[in-house]
Picture 1 (cartoon, rainbow, N blue to C red):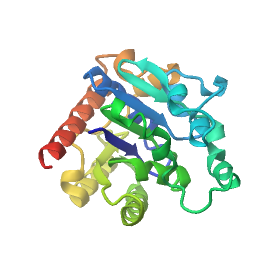
Picture 2: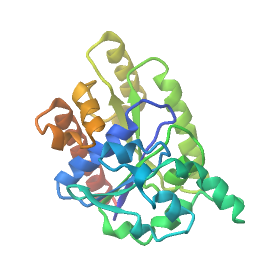
Picture 3: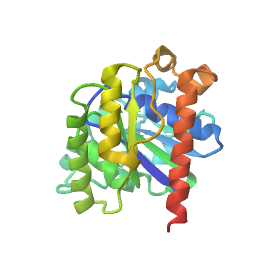
Picture 4: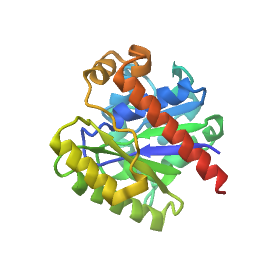
Length: 262
C-alpha cells in the first residue's frame, strides 16, 4: 500500500516545504520510491528541489484541470528515487477554472482523480500543502492516508494546531473517514526556555502522536533550499540531515506498524 502523507498546517513558515523536500529525499535514500507533490502555488517546493516551475510549460495545474495526463507533468528522479509534480502560480486558479468549466459543488477529490493512475508506482507520496485551509489543502487531506503536522516552537503554535485539527475532523466526517494523524513534528527547535515549554506542551497534549525527532533551527537547511538540493545531498553529515533521516525512520516505523495492525 502507498502511504500518502499530507504535510499540513495553515500557518506559514513552520517548515512544511523544508520537511516535504527533505523527508522525501531521506526516504528515497532508503530505497523507497517517492512522489513529491508541490500543492502550493508559490512553487517553493519545486524550486527547493531544483526545478524552476516558472519556466515549465506544464505543471500540476494542467493535470488537475484535465488538459494533460499527469504522467507528462512529472519530473523524474529530481533526487535519488524521488519524482516531482511541480507547481507554479497557475495552481491558484485551479478551483475557479474547474468551476468555470461547469463542475460545481464538492471538488475535493480532484487531486485524487488526477493521480489515481500512478499512485501504485510509489511507496510514499508526500504532499506539500499551502499555508491555508482552502480548496487545495482539502484536496490533499481527501487524498491522504495520513497527515504530518509541523509545529514551530513559538507562541500561538497551539492555536494553529487547533485550527488544522478542526479541519482534519471535518474531512473525516465528509470526504475521508480513514484519514489518520501520523504525528506532530516540532520544527525550528533550539534549546531555549520557550522552545522547551512549547515542546513540552505539545508532548503533553498529543502524547504518543508527538514525534521523537525535533527539527533544529539550522542555517544549513536554509542554504540547501536556496540552492535547490535536499539536505542529505548538500551536507550528508549535517545536523539537519541526521534529523530528517531520523524522521524518515519514524515514518517507516509508523507505516510498518499500521500494516501489521491490519
